[in-house]
Structure formats: C-alpha cells, structure tokens
Length: 363
Image 1 (spheres, rainbow, N blue to C red):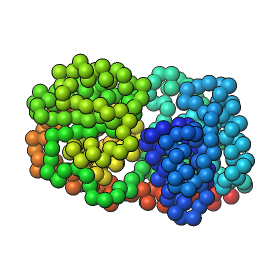
Image 2 (tube, rainbow, N blue to C red):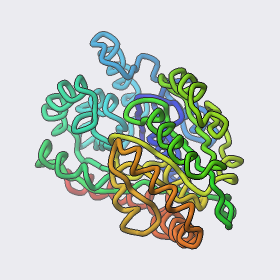
Image 3 (cartoon, helix red, strand yellow):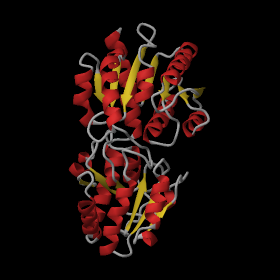
Image 4 (cartoon, rainbow, N blue to C red):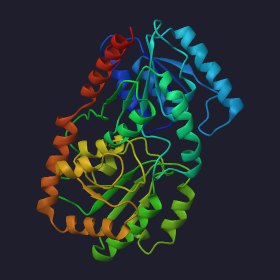
C-alpha cells in the first residue's frame, strides 16, 4: 500500500494514516507513505518501519505549476514503489493522484476526510472544488468516507464508484486520564484554522466563567489563527481562566486536568480523531453540530450544539458542570464509545477488507 497525503503536519487525517500504517504493517503488508519530509507524519511513519517517499512539491493552495510538479513526483513514486493499492488522503492529494494507478496493475482508493465543498466551507473552495471532484472522482476505483453525512454527496458525484463508510478509530494505551470525579476544566485540541473556530470558544468560555468562576479552558494546537487567538485571550475578561499552549507533543497532562472536550467548528468529516482521543480518555465532548457529531448525542456520551451558538454552548457546559452525576454517566459512555464500540484495529481491518473488495470488483 502506498499512502499519499497533502500535508504531514499533526492532524486528524495524519493520525488516521499513522493508525493505518501501524495496523497494516502488523498484518504483514508493505507500506509506503508519500508526504512532505521533514514532517511529523514522515517521522512517525519511519519510526513504525514504513517507507517514506518525500513529496516536496505538494502544496495545500492551488498552484498550477506546483500541482503539475507534485503530480509528476507522485507518478514517479507509484512507478518506483509499484503498490497494489494507491490510497489518497485529503482533497489535493486525492485530485493529483487520480488516474496514475489503474487496473490490472493496482487500484486507487480515495479517503474523503471531509469534502472541500458544501456548507461551512470557504466560498473559493466551494466554487473550485466541486467541479473538479465531479470531473475526476470517477477515476478512482473506490471511495472511503469517514462520515455518514458525506455519503449522499459523494454518491451523487461518483454514482458508479464503490463507496463505503469507515469511521475513524483510536487505540488508547493505559487507563483513562480524565479525573473520575468531575472538575470544571475543558480542553481544546485542534488546528487553529478554518473550519475550526477557537475565537468562538473564547466567547463561549467567557460566558461559562460568569456562571462558574473557577472553570478553566486549555487550548492546544497551531495554525494561522494562533496570533489572533493570543490577542483575543489577552483582551478577554476571562483571560486568567484560559490558557493557550500552542503545539503540544504530549497532551496527557492537560487531559488529566479536564472533564470536558470543547470543539467549535463549521464542518467536519465524521467524528474527529481529536474528539475520539478525548473520548478514549474519559473527556465528555461539547461540540458543534458538524460531521457525525450527532452520533455522540445519540450514544449519550457528548453534547452537540448548533454551529456558531455561543450562548447555547455555554449554557450546555454550565448545566453539565452543575450536574456531576450526569457528567459521570456521560464519561462512562464516552469510554465505551471510543474504547469498545469501534477501535483503530477495527478501522484497519475494515480498510483492509475494502481493499480486497474493490480489487475483486474491478478485476
């Protein structure tokens, strides 16, 4: 298997690939990762024993000359690695890699972590991404989506391409870190960039602190909004109850000081890796109604609020912190959801089965 992804930074799609890489190597497969090098994912892939192929010309933003060079790099990587499966992750890599590996030499799989088009995305993305997807998505042999809400659109754009849903999964080690007895602390772990909205999280926490003065919020992550976030916190009346730590290699100390996980966002694919990691450590998520967040409410292990609703989100947090018995019950269900209902091992097995299924369908 050869994975190709647009960026190698720390993030949900990158953690998804790391989990797949580890699981498939354990199952005896040869795995290569085409990614920016140096990067966090390149380092992780090497540590796991995968082959790392540097993808130096790949960029996130549209750039015809760089995109053409990146496609040539990907073509050379396919020719040298000769994979049975070329697995493309994220929108840019998904477009650049289509049509390079065709049957009978192998199959191309595209994982949609979340579409670059649709409600909540930037207008420029909605204008350019959907026509490109509609024109090229038919060139892949199989599609994986991590979110149920994305399936209808993908089926519409590629009606003849096999599509399956494989939810994100995590495999935590050790006992859960969040306190068994609830504390008025929340943790944010996400990239400080659209579609995430850390500035809205600050507004939410200001409202929470008015009702529960001892409540604290810790934010971890980097991105283009980091400077604005720092300024917003410095000017906040709740600044002494909010801390921003930037990039944190090990978030376990912060998980051990929080009972809640906070995520304000306008669009996601499925349930994010960071949310699942929080659930696996016993943190109860308070998240925007995006992606498959509805599953958390359905399972009784999280609270889902309307996108952009700072008042409603703050009220939900205050009510939950004031009801510790309910919070403990939700913590128990959160642990079940992430540790028993669906694991990374099951995600890997389902992906491997899908490779076989697609190869059988196109052979």
